[in-house]
Image 1 (cartoon, protein in one colour):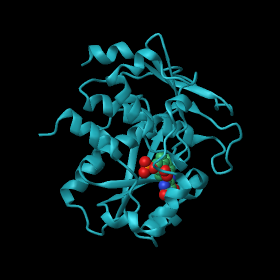
Image 2 (cartoon, rainbow, N blue to C red):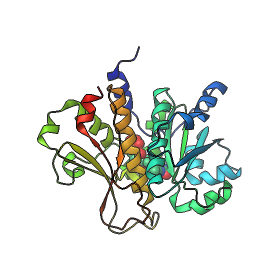
Image 3 (tube, rainbow, N blue to C red):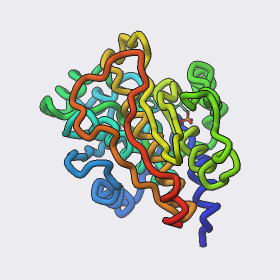
Image 4 (tube, rainbow, N blue to C red):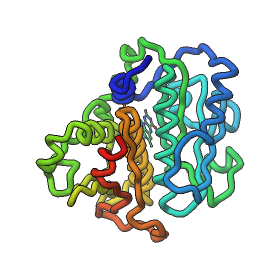
Length: 291
Ligand SMILES: Cc1cc2nc3c(=O)[nH]c(=O)nc-3n(C[C@H](O)[C@H](O)[C@H](O)COP(=O)(O)O)c2cc1C
């Protein structure tokens, strides 16, 4: 029997796996994984989410779509998660994919995102996808090779991404402090901690928090000058969705629930650079009443 604390600890222990055993998963396990689309929660039912599941074979079109990181990490499997919908759908894409990451992790299956924003057109061409569909990242997965930390490239990638480091609350909160009432609220702090430790492209942690009158708001943090690899700053929206999923799953593990509401359900405009875009909010009072 797993206690709430076990589930929560397991969630926080997740880290990217870049080295895999070549044992294949059982048919039943794979079937369960391929049914995940029906199980994961959405932020918005109007968005259509699905993914394609592949065994990794470098010379096939899907293997080529995964690109250079595929050849370096050589995973047994990967998936290409997509979404079809308005601009908020990119947040929803991260939200849904991260639930899959956490579910896999709870079953002992490791994974690592492999971003593909800079190669979207090529990826869509190779996977036969038409244009309104959005893909931000692949997800490679399989049974972790426990010796991975000894591998040189793993060390190198950790140096580049400082993958164990996370921003402090002073850096994450828009007004640079964790409010006093939250500092003393263990449930809220644990949920925030799960958000803080969420994975993100280049470990940029492009989310920001604010609490006013017991309402928590999450923002997507955009860079002042967009990176040439991500001109539309898709990672910031996608990874904010990942952070929200970590918070939601932590809340569930602790026996409560978050009800996310969009700040602006219809924003279709392209976000402008250099600002924190309010994405979604929930009431802290609900956490206690949902316990
Ligand atoms: C959207 C996205 C794209 C990513 N792309 C890559 C990638 O191409 N190669 C890689 O090694 N890691 C990639 N990562 C993994 C991040 O580097 C990693 O999540 C971050 O450094 C934090 O480390 P952790 O996941 O071990 O906590 C990606 C993560 C996200 C969320």
